[in-house]
Length: 421
Image (tube, rainbow, N blue to C red):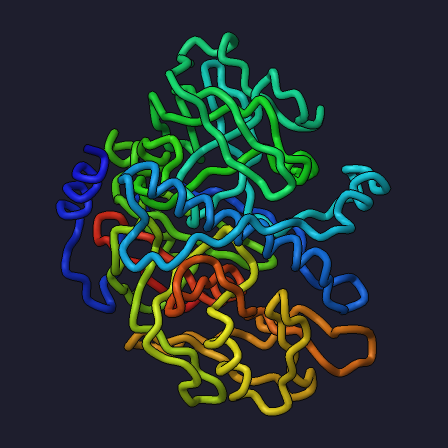
């Protein structure tokens, strides 16, 4: 039934999209997103440990998404090849946790902002993630959550209600994030969704327990929802809380913003170039991409998932190897992590193209820093990794998104890009 409902919804919202269509810039609300951290250390070198830890998190997220799809439809998505194993966190992670206090921990890069849940409303700092579809936060009865996190207490909210079932995500260290399911009023930047489904977890993986954010708000499609319910923005749009069924990101070192209900025309110039979402798997995925190096196509004809929940760009290992072969004097740096280097003094000109404009990645956003001080070898922000997405799907995170204004339109069933002002 859920599968049929999603297909009907997608069929209703799908429209033919032409490059250059521009949404109104004054229909929605702005949510500021402060930058949290990066994979470049203060001395300009690459934080290899943090990058490997982040990759582990992303591999497990996409593995969980595949399992969520199977739960919802009784089968894996079309084109499914194999379910990747749970990725284990680096062996030194436990020792790090024991030696470093939470206040000193610079965790994974996130684009976080405040949301409010309940009546009276309680504020939570959450990660806005276009690569997942559920909202979850800590419960007031969470046994392993740190005291610094905001926690949800259903009995303290006059609009909260517990639902049947339970939420669960498994991690490679053997722990789970689990908890009951609730509905309540959720407000993001003035956009309200009543009766919104979410989970309030009563246990967290130690890796999430260290994270300064309280939880995650997924902005993908319902088909990968572990809760088997509409994500926040889908609910808000159905309740007419926004004028336009689209949201947009500007991600940058300063002035980052999530805009709900259209686009913020003050942040971009020219027209938005839209590309249709190419499947009903549940991701913001567009096809026909090519990766260009120094003005020439290095790899072409692949699909791309646009994911605000990751900083690193990922591609199938063989495709990424072909990409770096087009860069003079590039080298494999870390085989298991899929990281490569290029000469710092002569960074390549890299761009992605979907049949329209070539969207360039700046030298800064292509570079995670030197392997060590004075090496002259810089680590690229594109890594080769098997995420269980097949051999023709790439994942473009904020190393790409920081170069463009990114628009996600449910009404057009499309992802769009525009030039930043």
